[in-house]
Image (cartoon, rainbow, N blue to C red; front, side):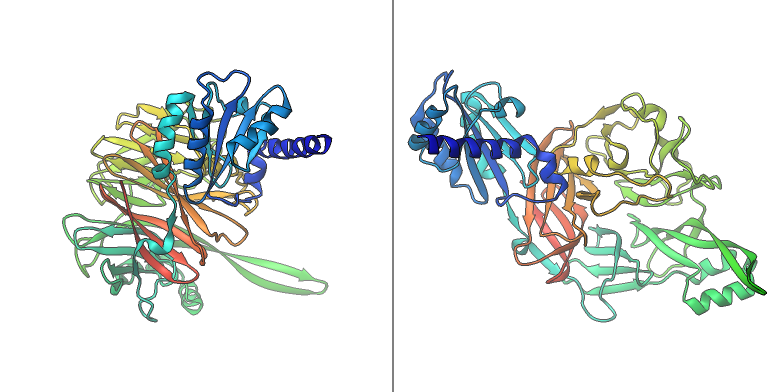
Length: 520
């Protein structure tokens, strides 16, 4: 009995440490062998309505769910009781709750069930007999695991002229069943068929852009840019126009250059070098229809610059920052993070989501330079805002009535593990700091959806996760998408209806694909 006791004690200590330190697993990005882990809590010392036959039946039902492992966590004052009870349960994974694992996981009534994801986060919790009985019925459907290869798929054009290099702000235009994206490598807007994946159009920046600031730039500088292949104008983000097949693009233009002569002395020799400091400006270019010359507008006013543009329902919006404000760590309390407008020219709108209002709900001492991601849906007339870089996640009405949300599961790791450097203008991090990251948020009348991608040193992974929340901010579920014989490079949300969620993924095996995920 001493040998058995020693083995049980060692097993108890190792598993207890495992469950009591979930962040250790997450920080090293070591997923569990199974997609889910179910902890089934039993109390032998105070077992109200403790029906061993029911427990055995429930455990065996749970074990039949694919891609999970089930662990019975048994509390008893006597360790020998657990050893004897394990034989009657008929499962191998049974541990003694000597370190109050149940208390750590918030189990109050027995029996209880806790479900953990691949990163050892608590996704779901069920207390008491009735709740556990309900869980046994619900969990087979709730613990859904999707194989990426089984999703309905359309492969994008792989020809030399049609292949997509780098997708920026991709979206589906459901009016004409097309996929639009800015290709950062080509500096072009690429338009693909949603049915076939064939390239339909490739749109280059208009010659009109070159005439805005080019006349004020030095000829030698223009010649040097041309020699380097550096464009005067660069597509950044795009959004559709509902009334036509046109679009609005945020386009960066080289506005001016300051040339400084730098003398470098090396002993008796002096060399002269010309240093160029280039200043850029973003404009809103409204293309009213196919192949039309764009109408060009400076977004909002001359005092602000923007980084992206979106269209949700009939509302265009952009993030905002002051021009020339290089240090955003001490932003004014009346600073607003977004600007809303019903016009693609981004005129006659209003500022939205001020820091002063956010400070009522969050302790914001220093604001990291990132506006975050905003999504709007007109059915509930509600915004959802996520800014992991500043630990902000909330709902907001158009009048800025804010409801904070707690990130659940894998999404929490984009908050806990992101530590950006504060001396740069952008959002930079190291691979070791960032365990998971998000790309965008899309929504329908039922709720909103987030894709969370796991990260390693190459920013590739063999799974990603779709999270669903309702418009009251309640977490609904987290669904893993597994890449069994493949590697995921990047995945984006590109469209959402009441019944489907569309993703654009790039994998090592198949390249760019449009995937359709069916929503229940």
